[in-house]
Length: 328
Image 1: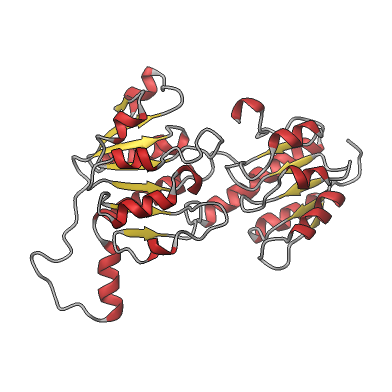
Image 2: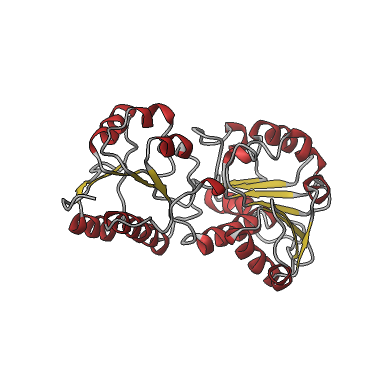
């Protein structure tokens, strides 16, 4: 790599401490308004930057990468996911892609439990009557929910976050089950006292709560489709903090309206969507605005990962968090 300082373009505002450190190390073009870049702005960025730092909401697709200048050599994604980047096309153009894995594991797992409790304990109903002033006082049969202890939790995707969810759920007395592309090693499975299901269909039919923690890939698009959602128990709860595309959202709405599912806790929605409007009207659905990784500590650590990836690349080495074909 040339000795000149790399030109780095950020597509969004990042924590101030991260922006300051990046500016110390590189020639950085900061995003002054905390709004997504337009397509035209993204085109300009890939035509001028040595390194692009997009976020998971920026679509770095084949068409955009095809317009990139020869100087663009690294896309340092600010996020654990990388489905927003066409990694295969980038690879054909000699552009490396990195991400920020691991740093939001605990934050996301905490959000899973928060959503699980909010749905099963009817927190949204309680908040509603307190906020509108209609609460008439305590009653023995009011706002009856369900306890988590003794319930079966089915985790779809037993990576870092899935295992962190399992440890938290076990502390609540839940029985841990999981379906994963590959079964965990025996010692890892034993450590979280988890039961593996080779058949996703069979697992879904027996769970009280299902937590979606798998990545978004072509093979997981609508993995929970109408047929699979219908396999779930009518009082079962589904929680999704992973990617909205894993669930067929329209099918989920139909089943919730028909009272064939007990409820849902959602932090992610189908791409380009803020969630089906019908979901917002359902008292047994808790929706949050992609808050799974929203802690100050987590967002700063994500930025530190981006810095390490760019600095390592600038020093002529492979970024430690480079996305490789086996991850796709």
